[in-house]
Length: 414
Image (tube, rainbow, N blue to C red; front, side, top):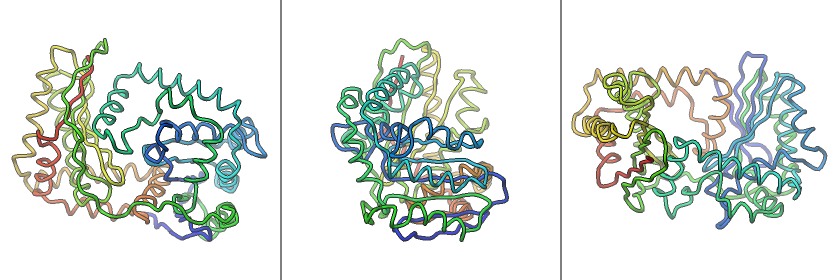
């Protein structure tokens, strides 16, 4: 595992650097500015701002923004989650300074021209409409809206059309100025550069002078939180006229700071992870040929989370798939895994994570998220240690708690 150098810039923003031997460098600016931080009545504001950051700054038009790194063979992009808005760039190592400067220009000097707001709003509305043609994606959004109803993470990242239509350039500028402050931000760099040189570049573009005197803001949440109960349980079927029947069942789960997070990660990987030998894939697809896709997912947020199992199948097979899914869940909730079974499951997860860790872009992005969530970079070695320490009783406990029928919710599209 490559060592990570962590420091705090003069502005108060944390910066993490990992030195690698590669002609390519990666940088990411991660900010607690995702959907959950939007003001009431403006659902989709964070994602809208993400789009508009590329529409012009005080000194650059949108064409020049897009051309700045791409003409060098690099790229800059952004994405929005329920909790973060992330700008990230990939460039040749000699162009890292250009990438850091460009990202700085976008967050500090974007002008959000109203004429572009009008045009980009239509692009996002088209994005929402196209999303409705993808039931696999849509069902997750609708499920979380119901599951987290009344909480900040219930809102869809894309937003709500009627609220998007109210958003103006002024509201975007205000949101960015409120959220893009040092305490809410983290800069991560992975490349063939020394920490000293990387920090010097970071200080140039993100030091205290860049923030014009703004040095504080809403700090990351770092305490432990109780397991959030669903606001209301539901077991519903919606007629969508889809060719397949889509089923998503799950519940609220542990947040990032809960001690049960890692055991749940391991359990969900066993049940329906990406490997073809995941239990549900082996039964629903390989043994009975009932599905093409089945997956178990766990999305931990800072203070809460969501665990769910999804599959798509022909309508007549729905009941059989649900029965088999419940049977698998019950196995882990009633029978303690043997040490050998658990060791094999740990080895598989550790292998998957190690392969992912070898992707430098993924490493760069995960460093930023780790800083925002924990105030430090959780190293790959630390994560592997946490996995190794999971016990059979912990797996039994989380299976019983998360998959208890009293808290299970189900949404079906047919």
